[in-house]
Length: 278
Ligand SMILES: Nc1nc2c(ncn2[C@@H]2O[C@H](COP(=O)(O)OP(=O)(O)OP(=O)(O)O)[C@@H](O)[C@H]2O)c(=O)[nH]1
Ligand SMILES: [Mg+2]
Image 1 (tube, protein in one colour):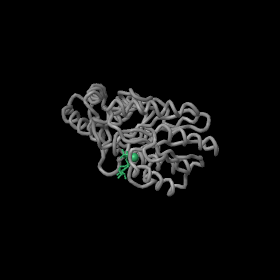
Image 2 (tube, rainbow, N blue to C red):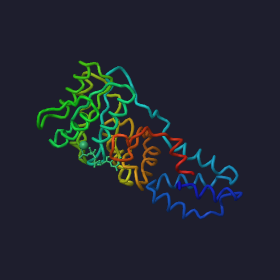
Image 3 (cartoon, protein in one colour):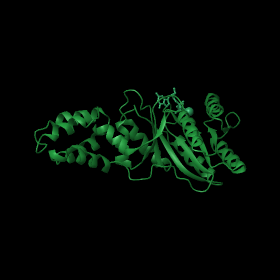
Image 4 (tube, rainbow, N blue to C red):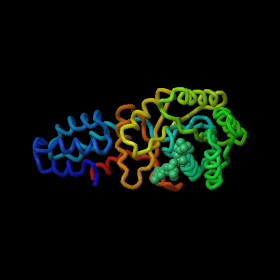
């Protein structure tokens, strides 16, 4: 049942919302990781709803807190480079593989860059996914500079005429400033030969309000253009994504709902709102 469904159905029979237990709804929204700022705004707006058009009004309120920015991938001149960033273990490498499979199923050509050079296992992981999806994975020598691997991947894409380059990066703590600065360097090096069309920040849908802090600090370090919210399978609440959209105006572009390649889909805001309301 959606977060707002009980609220909307309670309201339907009433002429105003005054009889409702606002503390109860507040607690539910906070428990769903919407965060205090968005929760307060939503409650204030919901209090103005009249019973007869409760559902449409709630839908409109939720819509107004989602980003109006495009949710489709920007596709400038080929190759369009997509940099995938985020803290440790959120699902960056898996999401790169899923996005590769997604783009390929839509008849796009691409190469992958294994720019997580800190761990040999990370390169192996992406190479295994690449083989499974059937796309080239550009790797560097052990301990090579992430920026140079990214540069090589773009070079290959230009040589073979690929439309997209997806760059997997190492997980980094958003409060480690040297690691955050490295992202800017990777981007600048890529931009010597191609355009970085998207910087997608991967957020684990189960992390709660810390996701908002991650989004803020990554956005300061590198121009994040959108989100991939992962681990929305099972009982994951993912409400933090809504808080990020509201406060940072970053659109969720894709969601991950499992560990398999196919557990991935473009984010559809109307469907999301349906889920919250019905
Ligand atoms: N249930 C579920 N698991 C996921 C999802 N996306 C990724 N995972 C799992 O999360 C774990 C970490 O995924 P990775 O893709 O390695 O994460 P990462 O961000 O690349 O990790 P580092 O490179 O170590 O920072 C793996 O076990 C994945 O299978 C998802 O949408 N749902
Ligand atoms: Mg990884």
